[in-house]
Length: 318
Image (cartoon, rainbow, N blue to C red):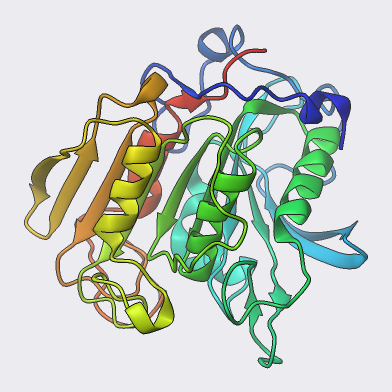
């Protein structure tokens, strides 16, 4: 790990002004003062802007791969935010890119690839699930991948966000617990939040926005005691307590099938928001291709909603 990355502050994330519109870069004047430029600024990128290509790095004795998307207007003279998108069990980075819409964001978007899980030869998974590959440290892989991105690209080290679906969404919760020095905010979708053997003691409050369908038959909204899965509202409330938020959320019916539970008054602006999709399945809201079983709402676009939330936050200045 680079000295710059290793010394990332343990203080809380801070809320910022409203984010740029989808598909546009943040104005230079609005971001320059608060950005922390990576070592890769000023150097040519490893691929052309607008492309999505596979790459690999060595991590933990394994060859680990990831899919990288650069915005159409990527420039090595502008420090870009990073969105890390973790696929669900058995999916891939390319599959997640196809249904999620995340590559439309004004950010460098990276889709890491998991390792084939235990007893499941053809299905990639992430650390923390009972079916993940034993002994594989995906938190270390995430840190190694960020080191590579910061060396090769011009990114803002204060604006690194994690999202993911199902098992990948659950893994973002592990990152919030174990890598809050590098991950600014998380946005799991239909997350599988299995018990975390690493415990959860983040160095600072971590902003969270979570999306979950009330009719999710894969990761039940009300939890599953036998599988160790918490009720989704309980998981969100736990993060609100961890972040020092006021105990009662503000609940709003924002669309006919969308109910938002928003915990505020949190330490250093690290708000928690749970978005319940009434009748929603194990799906990515707004997806126009298959993203899982059950109903897919089209009243919201998850990539747009999560971007509005996470992009307001930055790691604090050192």
